[in-house]
Amino acid sequence: MSADHAGDAAEVAPISAFELRTMAALLAQGRWLCAASLLLWLAALLGLILDAASPPWASIAWLLSLLAGLAQLYYAIRVDFDACLLQALAASGDDAHAARRLDAALRGLGLLKPGREGRDWPRRWRGARGLLLRQALALIVQFAALIAPFGRVWL
Image 1 (cartoon, rainbow, N blue to C red):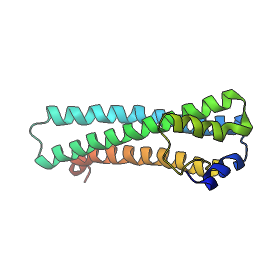
Image 2 (cartoon, helix red, strand yellow):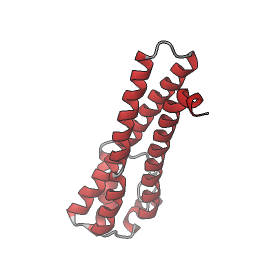
Image 3 (cartoon, helix red, strand yellow):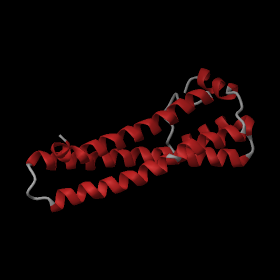
Image 4 (cartoon, rainbow, N blue to C red):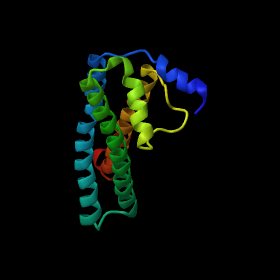
């Protein structure tokens, strides 16, 4: 870590507890995506197990759906972790040092990559929203792969 990054951590503008709770509330919506994904995952698994008469490409589509479900689960865990961290920061009431405390905790757990300390809140927020977007995209791929074998029915 360079001296520049250490100085940046002290310069991060404070954020209010309300803003932290707002970010956490949006990220908490990822739980709904995860629940939907679980249902799709079970449907793809049933399709794979029960429909032995389907063409081979249908099995491939259902396997893709299962893999997309696993990717969605990975992002769901990351998004939920961020939401919980933001809730904990909001509950602590220390708005001025929230970013520095968050970085110290993540660094102590080995969860913060070197050089990532001292990011401002808009940058952190973009990263968290990016994870939520990837989670949603994985769910869309999962759904599309699940219904692909039924496409001929709709034509």
